[in-house]
Length: 362
Image (cartoon, rainbow, N blue to C red; front, side):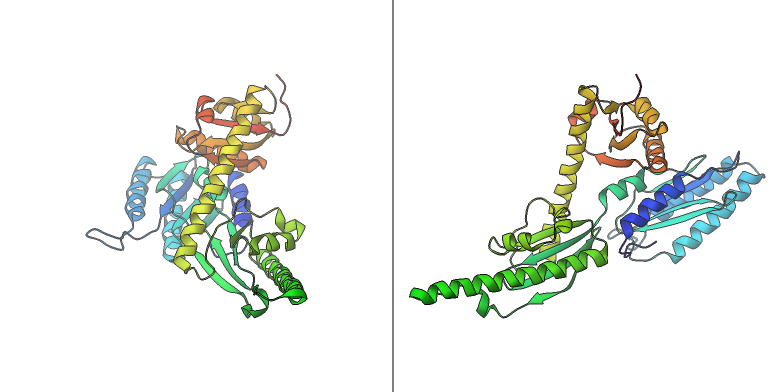
């Protein structure tokens, strides 16, 4: 699965569910590998990837821990070989690479991501899935529509890159207000307004087609104060639900770098706001003793009962193994993971909790 897939988020969610349900044979572990594939930009070895060193050292340590023979060692050696093959064949544009392997159980999954992972190599009886769950929470395919009354520029965002795609550009003559007199002024005003509405309707259809084609989970509107209200009114109802709250004020002639900076900052703020809102909801549910539980043990119990709808995790929560286990159970039971940073209310609840589908017995 590559980062340029139009359905990256849905494919990632399915991969996460699939890995979460694997059980290795007794005595055999699953190798979970996360790598930052960005080349080192400075220093004595430009182009060198720090993940390569971490991987080499950890594979050596794991192999030594498995003794001199046995099914676990055989499976691990096959896993290590497949990991090296996957790295060699990986998309060079991918900044992150995750690999999960258990040869004895027939498990082998790779995820090439548009954003880097934290380097991590673990051999355990269960897969380590928190980083994958966090990626699913934070990554999305967004369409950005930058519009004025006669020009539409379209961009597709997956992870960090922003790519411009063909939009629509009309001669501005029929779209600009000019000074006239008497009845002519009224007619000209209606003429211009009709043209602007027609352009907004055509633009809305192009935006809807692009969102459908790219599997966009979010739509960001950017432009001027005249065009955006018309464009919002023209969008189909099913697409309006995907429009991010707030607009980006950008000049229609803005360069790609300027668009990328503005869009990335905006999307990070939107994601942060949504995560904070989820933590607020959890804190309220726990306080009222209603559809919320807090703390690791209660959250794990809710997941095992299939009652958890959204698992809210402080990104700084420790130990890391606990985050991995909650992420694995969430994927296996269809719960969504929301990762949160710097929320005092969540910290006060112990750093983890779950918003429930239904009340659990006392």
